Image 1 (cartoon, rainbow, N blue to C red):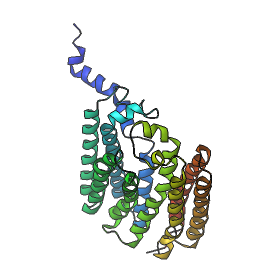
Image 2: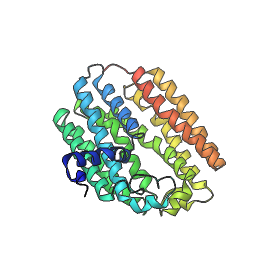
Image 3: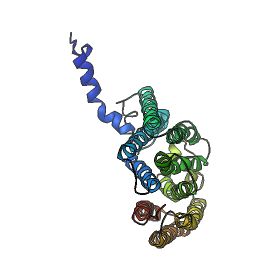
Image 4: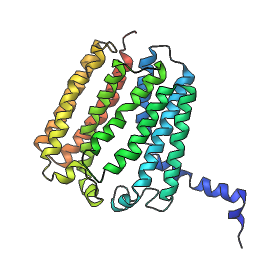
Length: 301
C-alpha cells in the first residue's frame, strides 16, 4: 500500500500539484487590470506623496479580493461553465478543483485582502473592497442567469477599484474619485456587450441572460453600446472639470472617446462578429490610454 499521500510530504505535493489550477481560478489575466486601476486611483489621490508600503498593501489587498471574487464566481457557475465551450477547460469543469474548494478559496482570499487593507491602509478602502467582493460574488453572479441587468451590476464592481485606490491614499472619496468611478463604469458596457455578442451562443447554451442572447439581430446590443460610449465622452472629461487632470488629458480623452464611440456606432449599424471584435479592441485601447494620460498629466492638489 502506498502511504505517501498520507504523509506531510504527500499532502504538500498534492497541494503544490494543484497550485496552477487554484491560480487559474483567480483569472490572472484579469486581475492585473484591476490592480492597474487601483494604482491609478492611489497615485492620483496621493498627488506625489505616495507611501510605498501603503501602495503595496492597497495593490495586494485589491488583487486578493479581485482574485477571490473571481474564484467564487467560478465556484457558483460550475454547471454553467460545463456547457460553454470557452469555459469548459476551467479548473472546475475539468475536474482539477471542486466547486466547494473554489468557493472556500475565493472567500479566504477576499477575507485576507480586506483585512490587509483595513490594517495597512484604512477602513474606507477595506469597506470598498468588501463591497466590491460581495456585489460581484453574491449579486452579479446570481443575476447572470436571471436578467440582462447583470451587466449594470457588474459595471459597478468594475468602477469601484480606482475609488478604492483613492480611498487608500486619502482616507476619503470626493468628486475626483467619483469621476474615476464613472469612467470605469461606463467603459465596461461596450466592452462587455462586445464580448457577450461574440460568445452569445455559448452564453445562451448556459442559460445566461446576456443582452445578445435575447437580441438576435444585435440592434439593442449595438444601441446600448453606443449610448454608453456616447455618455462616456463628457464623463471622460470630468477629471479636468474637477481639477484632477490637465488639458493634455482632456484632449487625449476626447480623441479616445470619439474613437470608442465610432467603433460602437459601427457595431450598431452593422452588427456582426468582426465589428464586435473591433469594438472590443477599441475598449482595450481606450482604458489603458486614459489611465496613462491621467498619470502623465495630473494637476497639483
